[in-house]
Length: 376
Image (cartoon, rainbow, N blue to C red):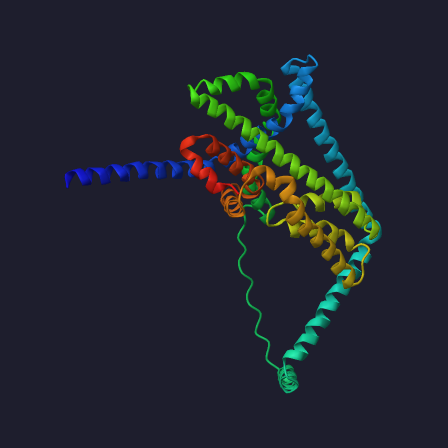
């Protein structure tokens, strides 16, 4: 009996300690999520830019100089895209104020009138005529009754407030916004040092392992880098295809600023689970400037929905799904888990992080059953 109790106690300990470790890890990921989001974002960008650095090194560029050139070109591309988007948005706001304000108000009023008419028609079908008449008579009877107006309540004493509501909101949110901006400013420097010191970091990391474990660690790193690059490149290619198709369709339908709404709708459509409403928002808002009838809005929504369905069900498995090798159940749970921990950033990083965990499991012999469970 003593031997059995010792074995049970040992089994309980061997199972309890890993659970405690996982709980501590999850708490740490949640508590320091801004740091981890910044770090993993920089790692993903470094994996994406590494082939360009290797290409420059083939033509005799030193790694430090090649990393600097690639990072500078990347920052310039981001700046130009941001400048173009800002120019389009500023032009849209100015054009709206000068030319489309009344049209948008008329369109909103027409839509509201159509919805009210549909509600009245539905009400007439659902509620019997006699009941409608009784309700109308009751409303008329209540209007005829003259109820004495209550005396005006004394004005409450006003106490001086420390802050206005807007000031209070900004005060409460300023700390988190400052923290996000501070961490975001480290991303370019992290990416540059990860690229320029890549060989040193790679060798130093492998020194923690010996023998076959070192080979497993090297293969895992290589597989993680391949998955991240494939995931980002596949999403970018699919988003670019959707952006071009959306821009052409919006231009044919006569929507203003198709070069702004098309890319926004195309890339928003790739956001997991909330992609469809995000993809509908830009063209619907702009369509208020030119559309008047409900049928035009319905047609536009149907086209965006069709593009979204075709992209996620036919194109996404070929562009992205075949590269990460995760089954749909694991993808859904991963989106829920990382979205709970890191909000919107978790939804974006969920699939590459989970695919990276699967890559490690596939290369470690004792964890291959977990890799098979995560795989497709």
